[in-house]
Length: 363
Image (tube, rainbow, N blue to C red):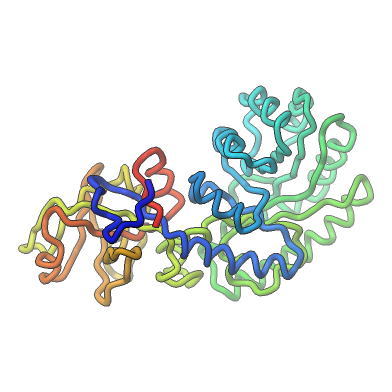
């Protein structure tokens, strides 16, 4: 739903995700300016927002290619008109029939890290674009970047397979979410030097591979991203408290908040209860100094969106439907039962997923 009345929140009855178009566009514009200047394609990961209207905003800004995290998400965004899609998770062989149908309808990119997966892709009748996933330190999926012989064999295998279009090397520096700025810069340069040499080696047994990186910390913090062909970061479309805590963004740049109805006052323990729990925010936690983990930060809703109060108030407890916010005593007067409180999420990707199919308000 979209409201532009004097009080855009008057019809909200239950937990509702608020999405600020000005903040989304400002976040994306900063990255587009950088990538376009350096001749790099920005292929944002839409798993963060998963919202067709936000996708429309990105298209209006000139973005033509996206990244997704599942076949289901690829199908949904293709129905919205997207024709160049990367599924950034190793191929699930039980979904080959769906991949076959999708590859016949759009330019579909998939990732592999095992010869058996690549072999199975021969069942795809349409051309399909394949990337080899590397593990550059995150320890999730991908071939460890030091196993160059295995990477070369997989690259060479793809050259002989009809319908397979080997595109390049793809990785996600997930370890950067817990690294210092200097470490991010040093590791980025080290990885690129290693990958440049690997790219030269692979060029002797096929076309020169493209390089595709995808994490919000490096994309946001590094001025020089040259050396890669595309960037797939997605969290930066919204950002969140986790990124703000790490110094990747400012709290004021977070582009989503959860509007939560106040359902209880408990001044004897300095808390307000809201109808917003784990099924809305997810249970992603953020350690806050020497205090217990928190699940979100309260903001003040305004007709234009929200503002950050001088006094930080945190969601300290979550159950399935309830949230408890530690607040100063005067907040009970300012936020009577039945009013709305805004909550910035710890991890916007998980909150957006939790709110998928629920109420959204674009402002």
